[in-house]
Structure formats: C-alpha cells, structure tokens
Length: 139
Length: 76
Image (cartoon, rainbow over the protein chains, first blue to last red):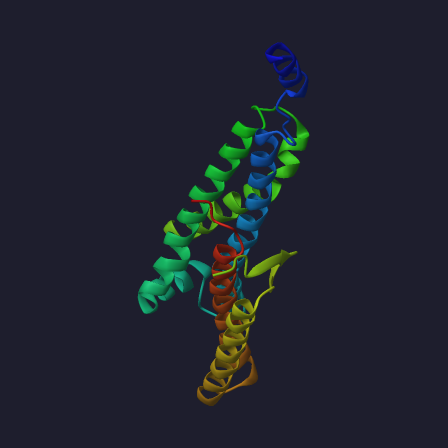
C-alpha cells in the first residue's frame, strides 16, 4: 500500500515549469525603461536647446552681438536658471543614460552587434547632445 | 494608489487614470495662465511666443518627469 502511494507520488511529481526566463523579463523591462528615460531626457534637453537656438538667432539678427557674448549675458542675468538647465540637467542626463546603457549591455551578455547599438541609439544621442550643451556652456 | 498613472505613446505620456488626467489638466491650466501672464507683460507677438514656448517646454519637462515616475510599478 505504502509502495503504491509512493509510486503514485513519484508519477505525480513533475519538473518545475518556468513560464519565462527571469533574465529575459529583466532585459525587456530594462529596454522599455531605457526608451522611457530617453523620452524624459529629450524633454529636459529641449529647454537648453531652445535657449541656444534663440541666442543664435539673437546673434544673427542683432548687430554687434555674438553667440558667446549672448551666452555670457544669460549666465549673468539668469544665473540659477542657466546653472539648472545648462549644467546640472545635462550632467544628470549623461549619468542616467550611461547607467541605462551599461545595464542593458550587462543584461544582454556584452554583445558586439549593430542590434545592440540600434536599441540604445536614442540614449547615445542624448549623451552626445548633453555633452554638446555642457561644452557650449563651459567654454 | 493604483499605478501606472500614464502610458507612453511616442514622446508623449498619456494619462490612463483619473490622477493622471488631473496632472495633465493642471499642466494645461498652468500653461494657459502663463500665456495670459506673459502676454500681459510682453510688447510684441514674437516676444510673447518666445517666452511662452520656453515656459511650455519647462512645463512639458516637469510633466514628463512626473509621468515617467508614476508610469512604472515600482518593485519593493
């Protein structure tokens, strides 16, 4: 009797089934998160980009002013605003997007393919634009 | 509170709950108020538009940040 029960138990026992790989779920979540982060980053970059565009137009249409002089004027008149949008926000965006790329790179098993670059292209663009804004502001 | 409040479509975060709609409508109301305020102080149409677009981008940036933070189910 006991033996039969044991055999029945054995036949009922199955291997644990895993519906989806945890690693795959993590990678998919990281990619969606990276896209969301790049959208937020574009919005935050649009503010200094708009200001730069306006200052460029000012230097073109107002005689006697240059783009650099307009930037320096803005630095003195709008001190806190310029520090937030031209210094702090690009630095934070660079850090956040770099960490996101690192996470995806790590989760996808350190790939060396074009597909990986395609996945993170917007984050790379955000980093490049943030660096450009920092360079314009600091030099 | 029931998350997520927003879902992303392209470069916009669209509200999916009442809380999300309240945030969006507050943003729109503040944008209208800033337009009227800027229009009252400025001397030309281009002056109004330049300052208003700048304010609109700031509102959009803050809205997208709030929407991003509330569009995810944060794991404990």
